[in-house]
Image 1 (cartoon, rainbow, N blue to C red):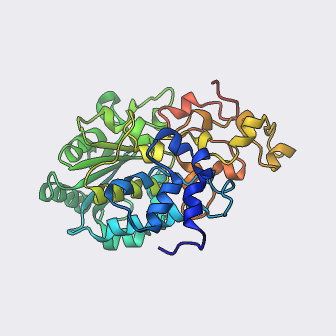
Image 2 (image 1 turned 90 degrees about the vertical axis):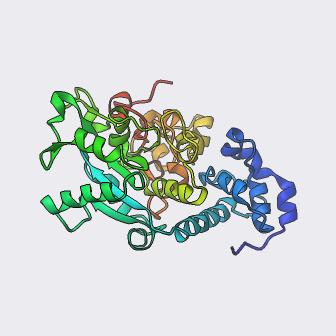
Image 3 (image 1 turned 90 degrees about the horizontal axis):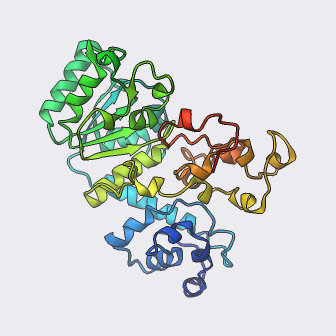
Length: 357
C-alpha cells in the first residue's frame, strides 16, 4: 500500500480519531490509530484483518485529524486489497445458483453496477454462476435442466442466493416457475446448498410483497427453509458491496462473518445509520430541515423532521455509499426510509413523518 507522507509516531500518540470513532465505542479492540500503525509496520495478521470490516468509513475521524491523514481512505484502500486477495486465491471457483421469486430484480441490477470487483471480473474470474434467470442465455426447459443438474452435481458444495419473497398462501400458487411453486423450488435448491444468502429485504423479511394486506402470504427465506447457515443481506436494494464483502470474508477466513439476531453481517449492519451519518451533528445541535427545499434542507441540516428513519435503522449506507459514486439518499437530501429493517414498508410509514423514538 502507498501511505500518505506523515509522522506515524505522532499519529499513534494523538488518538483524536479514536475519540470520535463509533466503531470503537461498540468494539473496544478496534482503534483507527492502531489500525494505521499496524498497516504502516506491515504487521497485520488474520486476527487483525477481521477488524477492518467493521469500519464503515463514516468519516468522523477525518475532520478531527490534525495531520489530515484521512484514516478512512487508508482503511478503504486496505479493505479493497483484502477483497482482491480473497477473490484471487479461490481455486476451484465456487459454484453459485441464484434464484428469483417475488422481486423487481433491483438487487441483481445493483450488483451489475458494482465496481470492486466489477460484475465482469466476478463472473469470469471469481465465481462459477451456473444459474441466474436474468443473466443466463438459456431459457425454458434448458434453464430448468441446468438448475437441477447443477444442484445434483454440486450437492452440498454450491452457494444458493435468493432474491425476492416467497408466497405461501393457498399452497404458494401466486409465484410459479416452470409449473413449480417458489416455495417448492426454494426448499429443493436451498436445502442441498452449502450456504444460503438472502439478498434484498424481500428475500430476507418478505419486503414489499409482504406489506399489508399481504394478499399472497409473502414471507422471507428464513420462514420457509430449515437452514442453519443462512445470511441475510437486506436493503431495497442492498448495497452490492455488502454482498461482495460478505463473500470476501467467507473466502478469506473460511467461515461466515459474525451475524446479528436478524442474520445480518455485523460489519455491515452493526451500527445505526444515524451514528454514521454526516448530518448527525446537526441533530445534536437541534438544526433540522423543516421542509424540502427550505434553507435548512439546502444547508444539509438533519432530515429527522422530514421523516428520516436513520435513528432506528441499522446499515452502513453513510460509510460505503453506493456503487463507487460516493452518494447515498441522505447525502442528496432524501430521508432514510429504513429499508434494511423487517416490515419497513408498514413500520416506517408514513415515510415523510418523524419516527417515534
